[in-house]
Amino acid sequence: MDLDAYVAANQPAWERLETLVARRGRLSGAEADELVMLYQRVATHLSVVRSSAPDAVLVGRLSTLVARARSAVTGAHTPAWREVARFFLVVFPAAVYRSAPWWVPTAVVFFAVSWGIGWWVAGHPDVQAALAPPEAVRQLVEHDFADYYSSAPAAEFAFGVWTNNAWIAAGCLALGVFLGVPVINILWQNASNVGIAGGLMWANDRGDVFFGLITPHGLLEITAVLVAAGAGMRLGWTVVHPGPRTRLVALAETGRATVGMALGLAVVLLVSGVIEAFVTPSGLPTWARVGIGVAAELAFIAYVVVLGGRAVRSGESGDVSAADREDVLPTAA
Image (cartoon, rainbow, N blue to C red; front, side, top):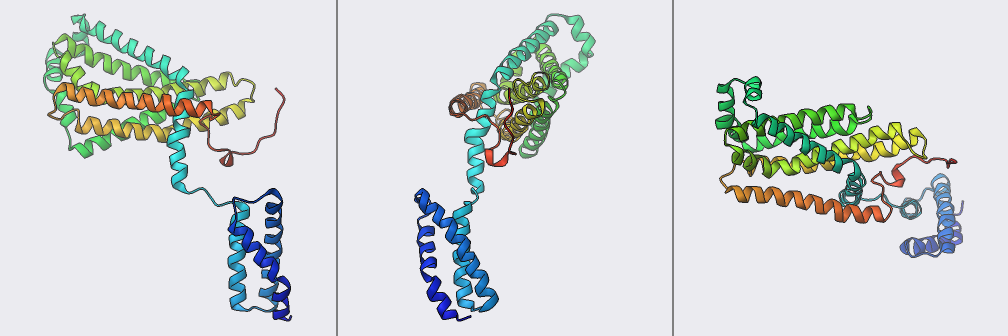
């Protein structure tokens, strides 16, 4: 093959492809079609040169041009940081916002049960005696409850609390598929523990210590667990009532959004764990510690309402992006 003649014959196509690649993103429909056609043609040219007249300089030039054209035709992969940003600014808040009809009522019931158990324990000495001997109760209210928050170095304590709460949240999310029954059991255990501890503290005139220690981190921590529980029960209800979708499609869509929430809630629980380790046992006055907890809770609620509401109104479902989902055939309702 006469390499010089081959270059002269095809040089205009190569130059045109270079021009179109340089203008990627600003092409008309006809130019986009031309880009695809020239990409295929130049890829063939590269193959011919490699097999018939392997000139290193020309092969290098055409290889670079074909690689750039391939990127222009297929589109570059979204950078990882953009995917992470989209998850926390759009996908996660949208998923939490859409599941609010489940986790808000769950929160109301949870706090009602906790307060009811606490009131019952605080007002009935016989119940307190049945729960623990007087010496054990005195040890709890005078030492153990407060000492727990400084029982380990702050960083180690934060990690332990975070992993424990993250597992609880993940369990609520994943086990919801079993019609929500395991989720109700998890919530009952947590509501009982909070109510019993609060009732014993209140009955022994240590209610201020109880709320002063549990409020800074507890608001955000319990909210995250309740969000997970509500989303888990929503997933369980999908099994029972998938709506106009087939049960498998409904479970796939709701399941992806639900399990994806685990990552976002892990970050929320990390924040509450840091507060519990570094703020709750600190020497700050009670009003300051409680103020930090309230501020963290309000920031999370605003994050969900503002970003989540905006995302849902724009059509976001909280599911993974369309590019990461399987294609589905349309079905009749």
